[in-house]
Image (cartoon, rainbow, N blue to C red; front, side):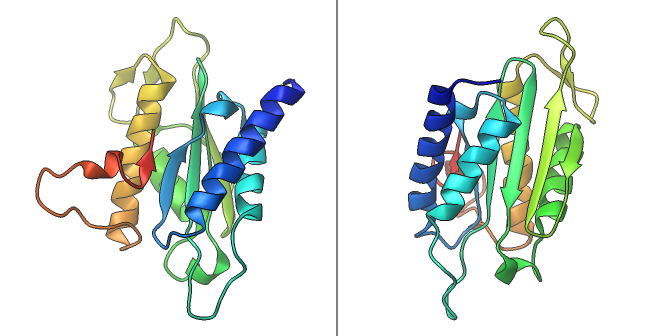
Length: 177
């Protein structure tokens, strides 16, 4: 149950991200603010982004992407891994890796697309992470998800390595939050 204007905003943000991603070869983890923690809106943004991607060229690989959106009590995640990357990464494996660090549940899983969600009963309850820590905001859990995503991608050489120890420039680079 969302308004047409919310749907239009999610589709537009997805298209904008799709245009930016189209020129990338590295995998990306991106926050989609307009989806406001709604899986339906996040799916719309991902579909719009995928429409903007070029068709596969023989010597070029399209980037994989994870979209994350938070609302007051929910963090939704969806990832898309193009077929040409399946020998290195699948959407299911990527989502499992991220969810292992933040808890939550796998909603659907496949080689090309996977969806996950972390939720709490209401705003009076904290988000409980697998390491025992508690987070009060879905946005904070989203940041943890982004860090876990980048860590997993770097292990597979699908995200640029840190240039030097203590370099956290990835937050302002390929990761948008």
